[in-house]
Image (cartoon, rainbow, N blue to C red; front, side, top):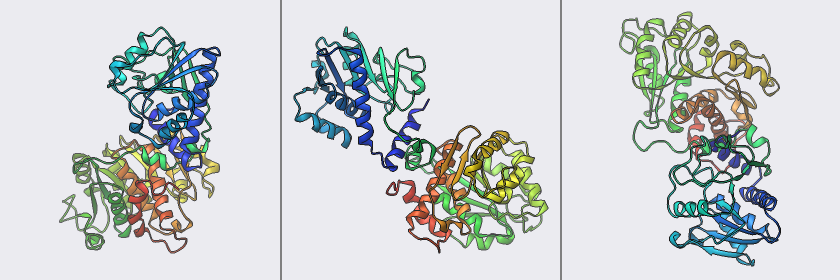
Length: 486
């Protein structure tokens, strides 16, 4: 089965792979016509009730394939109000035909007549909730008619994911749905699943559709989340890159908690970052002016992250001082929120019993330390990575020439990116992007989309070698908005 949100992503990914939405609509409409012919005889009357979106467009296409039936198309609204270019193009294709067309400007005057079959193409999987006018009045007329109803994708007014029917939803005896069955149709007695030519790669490979379905962030400060990077010590650039990338990916605020000894260089990277030192003068008071994360710093770091519901990024630039590793284990053991675990902190995860929700972003050597396969070919060992994620109970985004992303059940691949991404720091930007997206998506979905956005940002720079991780912060917003979907 496939949810409506996932179906929208797959449609968009198929278009990016060279199968345009208009071709998918042509296949969908043809499938509707095939089922309509199975339910009727030549010469029977078929009334197609079409909305102004792509679901209606499927119905408009179907009308062209029913040339041996007595077809009437009822368009709910004026032609100029058709919402999408491809639906409008199919309306125009009917203009030169002899198909009987009626535009319904006032639903109170809607009349079906006495057809042998009604095709409900008013609303598709993207519309849920109570029916509005003119659909509400027309739905009542459809249900009051004696003819059986064939619904396109889902009956209008039925939630495709839950099966919940709004008041006045169309009661359809038959359904044609596309690509895969929708969860809301699980108990429907007559559902035809039509293959409309979506390539398997549209589901398997992460693409622009995975980003598009995330939508925009909130309108108010704080709605798009805060990231809290715990890093730095022997390295200073990594935590700054992660925090900066999270801002580029839509986070409202980015904090970096670091040792007092590296506060000034990290704070000097960008005025956009809020840098908070721990040690004698900062977060986690009670310790000395340490040059690394230590256990005494952990309680206040946990309190800060949980009180502000921050998405934590643990690991960039931390190093592997024994006290730092002990502190990282302690943090994971006490923290119950959401975190991206990167770099030196990744290998510690199997040693900790945590209530936190984690996305792990290992490179190939870190994946081996985590307990995964030691290989340069992540794709060939995707099942092993999936099994590791299942054992750990966390999402894994394994970084390579082709990223492998899995939540322990589903495995996706992402091939966005360039050879120039072997430069240091691109993994830190990835951690920042994923953290920002976790404010509006589930972990697996955020990991998939983050992998694509980070790789696409590199592609938009149109450079082979010589790429610098800092430059990705300029193109991440463009990639997040879709780029040119290439």
